[in-house]
Length: 211
Image (tube, rainbow, N blue to C red; front, side, top):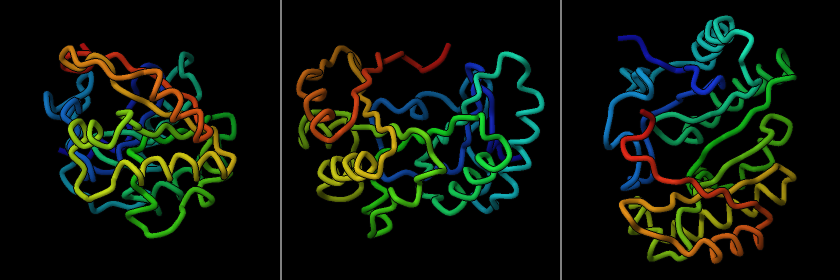
């Protein structure tokens, strides 16, 4: 099966760059199913180029139709920022060729830790919005829900949120509410987000993802 690097969902284009992730969130969709609305997102190979992604992007865009919402989202079954160079090259292609398309990244916020530098300024002009998975109001709850693969991950996430906001990128945080009846302190999450220069988005947990 060929790699599904680009797919259409809810009339938006999604870009699936990797299956690797520095978290193993207990509510992650990929723990429950192998596809999103029939799109097989497990990659056969991680060995591909920006040109491969762009080729699929052109094809999906041509098929998108009149209902396309002019948004491209870097989001799949892994952490897209782990393919930072490819992500930046694809985003640059989109901005240079389709400036009307809004670009967004859904990320776990670990990129600065991974690359040992502040990568947020590198996204300015390429990414219109970045959505960071805050996931919890405390480090203890974050670790329980996200199962990060390194220590002090929650602090890294908060620092990344601030770095994006400071860079002038529209920054949104997200939490998953009501996972198997578990409720988070939404007010605390909102305060943390606001203090870091971001706006909180509460996502209601949907069993088994999309229907």
